[in-house]
Length: 418
Image (cartoon, rainbow, N blue to C red; front, side, top):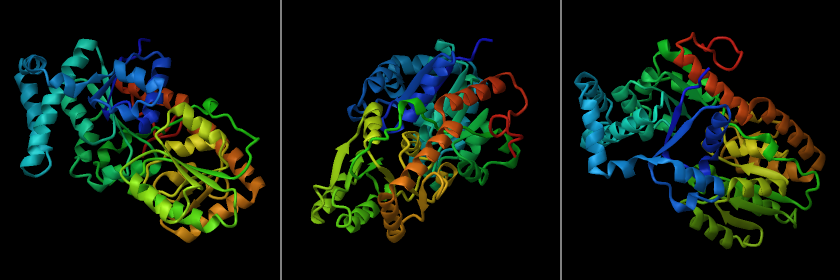
């Protein structure tokens, strides 16, 4: 069987913080799919932290760069104007689904222009299925491109921020018009079900973001006490909770170190707080790192910490668990589906400094418990969060909907969706 040629679309690809999308693309290619990667914007140089990102950046079609060419834009839209009913239908969809106000209408008309150029590119390349990650602006472009060209399309919905403004981004309309929707967790799916018409629930499937466990070999010879955080340095990550916990535990654990991988808008504020507390020699800011460098950091750490206030299902938790590193996270969104408290790690209430500090203290003080959590965590990731297995499931969904088969179910070999 000839596998469908797929296009992948995101607002910005590749990004250092979205390596799971790169893994998904790579695994689909390994399965035999031809995959054209597309990005609305051109990725900033700060995200091209490794050879993989740089290579993907070179081969990715940049929509806005193409739109900047009047010749390409006019040519693309003349192509679709030749089918006036479809063209007007897509234009009407852009108008109806626009956020309120002049600005919202203007943006959706811009997305319509982008969609015409993207749709032409997909048609020229022989793409038969378009998949979008992140259900915001780029997903609007995907929806309009599908309406213009008739190409099948789907999207992955992550959360949590998309659910803060579901009506603004019209996730109800997107769920209705997509061939299917890939939800990253049961929790994420349930949130979309709040807004999607029940008649579409059976096409809301769960496809986990995943990792390659073989890239994260356990290191049983860790020495000293080192904690690791990987993520954006932004308010939702709860890093001040972590700094407070470190401040309280440093006297008890003289060798304790915390390494922070990532960057973001709060970095300077967080660095200033660390300096004010006199923790510069205990807390190190490392900036963005490549996938290989993150794997190296995980191999040298004793505890992975993520005190987030809002998440989907953090891929970096999967990476830590695949490395057999015990994890400490918060009880939000899909995290409890990945980390079982007291079995494969610790999960505490978000924003609770006392609970977070106590759990971290317990992890630091009992090496055998850390080892047990780490081993259980690795087993969990291998069983349910393998990137190769999840890409196979996504491929099965794409092929199933291309052949207009009955609903494939919620998860592989797991009953009906509802």
